[in-house]
Length: 195
Image 1 (cartoon, rainbow, N blue to C red):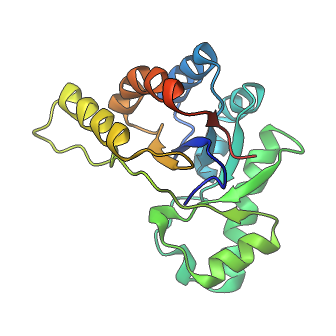
Image 2 (image 1 turned 135 degrees about the vertical axis):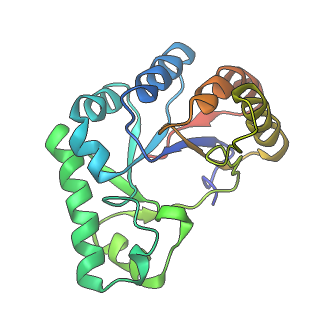
Image 3 (image 1 turned 90 degrees about the vertical axis):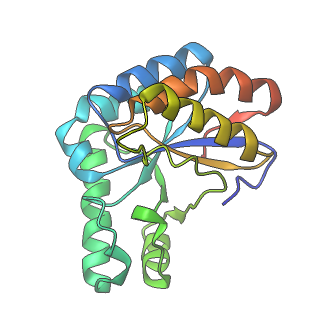
């Protein structure tokens, strides 16, 4: 849930997204901020160029399962291991030798088996301290209103050591929110990638 230091870690889940991930990477590069990308295996396989771009930007990798299976932790040990290994293989097909030190359970649905098998594969399980629910945009909510809600939530809840959860997949308001949030956070905290 925390970084173990005073640094604040920005984490982005469910990508890479061919439209939004490049925009986020450009923003992070401009602001000289490193983040942690929790990649879904099917997306990594579909967009190896973006996996390479994440690595080239100096960001860290996190395994977020093969296809965002919310019940992964309840499956057999064999199925859990196969899912995580398949995801790591998709990331490493794009970036041979990539260090994948983290795993985040889809939906935060950790189980003892999922944590144990991840550890056996060399990955620490990471949760989060701040969740602006950027994935939860109501149909009646405009992109601007949703962006403003994300900004308010992150500003209100982020403290030293927090891991902040956001999404670079199918969430344009998130990218817009971070155009405001990164300068705000950098004035108050050291922004760190989980390494």
